[in-house]
Length: 324
Image (cartoon, rainbow, N blue to C red):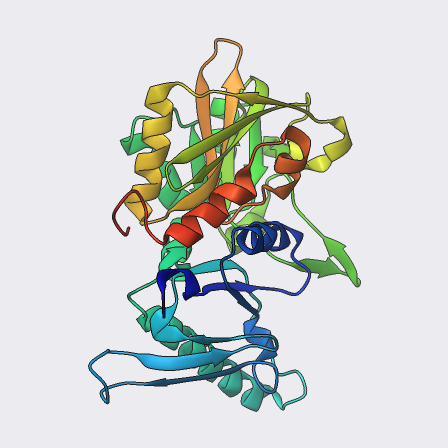
């Protein structure tokens, strides 16, 4: 098999327009693509791997509805938004058992591969997805971190709000949630001391001093390429109203670029979406990293070639001459 014949695996859910953009670029550049979703395990997804029978540590095959990939020949894996099966047609105990076998069987086979570049490896994404860890690393790297408290102690929370107000409350992790069958979501919201009661003790909450910002920035890094977009809205959380947003492409200070790249390197990631706040003095304030954040709409709004950059990285199969 020649280098150009080595496939790129794309793991994602069926309706993923962002992945479609990258696959379009991969097809345009002549790279073979095998797209699959773990939830399709069964007739639409077959996987097998052998260990200890060949000179190669892992020899196997993954068969999706349209294409098949020899796992030892995979060039790169784009771990986008895959969905794991839940086996709702089985009894609860059987469903839990089957789901675990898929996660540790299919997942274990893929994680065992040491040849392909991952964008990003799911185990490294998981490690980077803890906001308290992000806050500590950001401060160690010299970024400006707003005063932040993570606590389930109502008294401590009220003290923090009184000391650092105005304060906002943010989720520690976005989680699918429904109330009376209606999908719900959470945004950054202002919080005052009178709103904090003893129910807070049930779980940790994140409180953060509000940054007096003039704009937000979403920064996508792909390999060593940096795409920075300024978002003007006047909103506390710009995600609440996409129609109110204005976009402009900006260049980041060289030092800030280097720090964000170092942040990814710390967690072993090759790509990520950063959120920063810009204040009236021109200073940047850390908000968070989404290791697998959305960017497709930014390409449409700005013309930045983000999908092409990801496709190029997957085809190259390495990060500036070395694997992370």
